Amino acid sequence: MIQIFTNDDVIRYVYEETSSEENLLIEDALMAEPELMSFYLDTLEIKCLMNKIERKPAERTVQNILNYSRNYAANPSA
Image 1: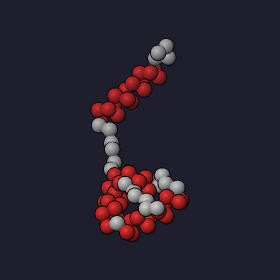
Image 2 (image 1 turned 30 degrees about the horizontal axis):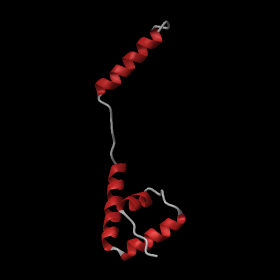
Image 3 (image 1 turned 45 degrees about the vertical axis):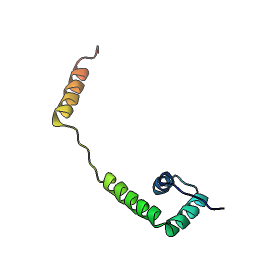
Image 4 (image 1 turned 180 degrees about the vertical axis):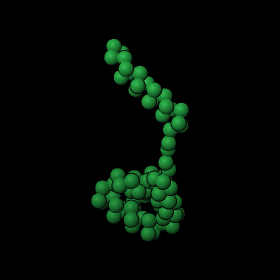
């Protein structure tokens, strides 16, 4: 029986959402199908780049939160 794997399967593999049995089959497919291997390598690169993204709130947002906290603590009836 020939197993056909999709890009979705490769993404699940990259994020370790596949079983041990699926892993072996997907790894075999990656070795046999250059296009699937290319997609796998691209997906790994994108995952790595996404992990490097740092999000910081705007200073105004931080100040609004701090001001709210100060006012909330100063007003126990709130």
